[in-house]
Image 1 (cartoon, protein in one colour):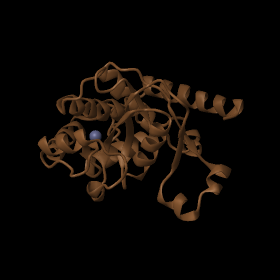
Image 2 (cartoon, rainbow, N blue to C red):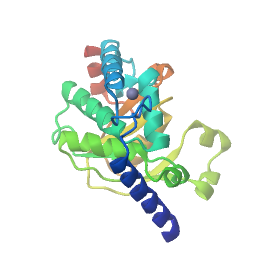
Image 3 (tube, rainbow, N blue to C red):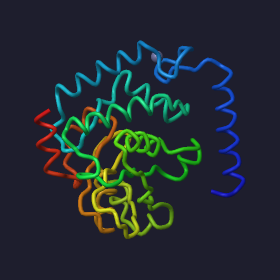
Length: 239
Ligand SMILES: [Zn+2]
């Protein structure tokens, strides 16, 4: 990002913060005025969480909720209207699920990271929603959060075949001292993003990659990617 672009993003964030301080907040889910997430949307989210938990996915990635209804509205609010109130709720829910799965921070996971979105999207929005969620999850688990992945874009992507480009985004990670990484994404669709990001972390020397996402689209329940930890298979069916 150029200095001008960084200034524009910083200015936009200041204006948003000022507007938030003066105006009553707008619900990230239904846009009613009064709270960052209104009581009704919170209740709907709790129900969605309970239902998802009761019918665990057959994949091996922990996800907190299904990407539909109120969850979809909250994530769209987070992505396109910078409605960050939703990130705390969704990230907190995911962190609690991981603890309930038996994950021990500091033993099973050393650090939290995220699969970055494209630079163009992050620039347009002024933030990366997966990073915000990863930071919330890390804070809840009492773990450090680090940017370990870079998205391979533009000219570099041209070296890939067309089918490779269409199949999955590509990521790169530098050699790292971290050995047990929790990799966060916002929504799992095919699992291709997490599989590619997970592969890059392993190439960089990470021994264990655990994947988690706030939500999964209903069709992603048949995930067959490469981001597989046996523990998740056991945990997701034992829930
Ligand atoms: Zn609402």
